[in-house]
Structure formats: C-alpha cells, structure tokens
Length: 302
Image (cartoon, rainbow, N blue to C red; front, top):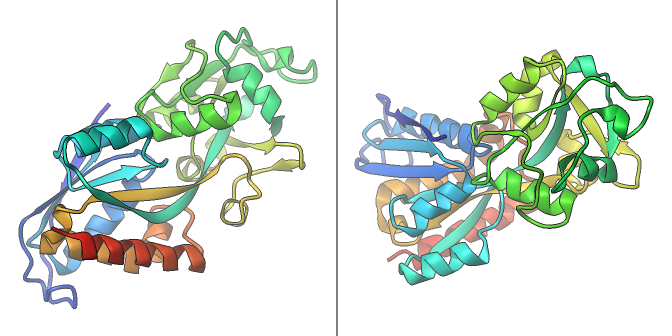
C-alpha cells in the first residue's frame, strides 16, 4: 500500500537559506522511517515554507524501485540497499550516499489476550518459517494459550520483512505465507489489536505508540528475555532485531539547494526528530558518522 503526504507551511527566516528556498523534494520508502521523514519535513517547512516536500510510504523495496528509476530524491530505508538494487541504480546511472538518521528495533507483538510475555528466537522461527503449521502458541509450549493465532506482518516490499526473515528464519524473504501482510504498519497494529489471537511484528515505534492495546513480547536469543527500549536498541543488546535506519540521497539531487538543505536539517536535528517520530535516536558516534556521510554526499553532488 502506498500512502503519501504533501507538506508545506508558511515559514519565517532561517539559517538554512533564510526562508528563500523553493522547488520540490520527493521522498519515498520505508514505513518505519516514514514518521521521521514527516517530522523532518514539517520541521524544515517551518523555516522553508516555499519548498514542497512529498513524502511517500511504499516500503523500503518499493522506495528503492522508485529511487533507482530516478523518480525520487531521497529513499527512506529500514535496511541497507541490496545487491540487486545496487545493480538497478548502477544500470540507471543513479549514484547515491547512505546516511543514517535513527535506530529502530523490530517489535514482536501480541494481543494482550494471548498472555505471552517472552519467546525465544527458535520459537519465533517455528511460527514464521516457510511451511510452518504453528496455529497456536500452545504448540510451542503447553503453558501458552490455545487460542488460534491471527498473524500480521509486513509485506514483501518492506525492509522490516527482509530484516526479520533474515535474522529469525535464516534467509531473507523466506517466510510462511499464511499471514495478513501490509506495508502499512498502522494496519498491522489495528489487526493485532482487533483479534484476541493477534500476533505479529513491525517497527518498535508503532508498538510503543499502541500502549496497553498491545503486548510487546520479549525476545530471548540465548542471553535472556530482552524487550526493545531506547537503551537495548542503541547498545545492541536487543539482538538480533535492532537495526539502523537510513535515508539514501541521489547525489544528483544533492546539487539542488532545497534537497541539500533538507537533508542537512534532518541530520543536524536528528536527535529531536527521532524523538518526535518515536524512533530511537542515534548515539553520538553514529551522529558523527552521519555527518561525515552527508559531507561526502555534498562533495559528490553533481
């Protein structure tokens, strides 16, 4: 599913061009990064109201398809660009720079009626692997609920899907087919909330925003049960489901003053914007690296 917003605002003066910038910026990609891109656009438009920023949400894979076809300036991604996507961009003559903008954990979630608080990575694989016949948690352990599961997860264009299947099932894209899929995390939240057997996975920010309507299930990868938090995502103890989030910028687009100014604003304000988007902010070391990545993109702009 593709969602989009066009954000404009009346703005005053600003150090990023004195409010005199114009033109447009096209952003698309990850549903996980989508709230951050929206927040970055709204913040930027407070000072640069003359710039029209279109923010889409077609999933990481869908976003890279558009990006490598030259249809967007920036591609939001919840995983690194794949070799196939690298080849597609190269064939089209698209050069780019990866810039980290935040962190995230993939949350495993359940309807509170299921009463489950922690699962091992092996149990998650039993649920989600290709050909799985697990239809209730009691098949994993008799102490768990016998309620029939209603499974919800990202679609195949989602970077969350790619990351989760690789880390849990052992191979990217390998999954059971009997689940309700969507690139729109809000639909997944609604699905898990609305069914007493609801169970799934999606970005931590969406799970956190749902509050008590969902249970965030801890994951035990061999070092005890750990749930995603700012601390466990930043320090990597929420393994293996913690990950960086990126914006990929077309280096040709970086020659446009409005694109360069927008991305600079997004990185300079990355900590506060991540908070607004309810994502996990970068560490100081990650922020320093992001600024170096941005400087490289500016240098290579053409």
